[in-house]
Image (cartoon, rainbow, N blue to C red; front, side, top):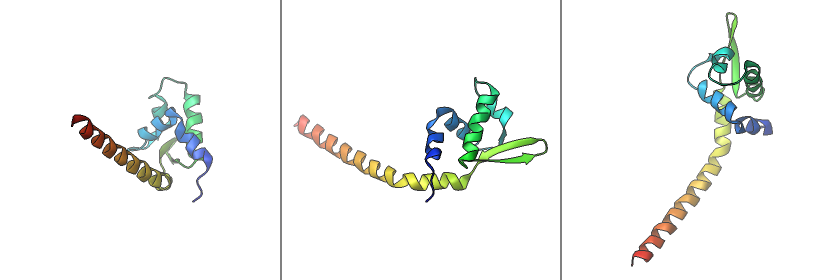
Length: 109
């Protein structure tokens, strides 16, 4: 798997995560995306550039406008990478929950 470090740096930024959520259900122009934030358009454009370079977003022209949308293949690649860690933490939380329940039972008796 060829996941570059910058993919994770890209999704570490809260503004970029918000952009990913915005375009998750529909393609949007840079202007439409920028209108959702209290920041200048060049700042949003920089975020879009980073997300596009990381292949998290794709951009496609439609007339004179450029529309941004999620790259489902890259998102799936990230999800596949993270899945084993999620299972590990789910197992640990389940064990912790079991320990806490046993502790509560012992405390009540």
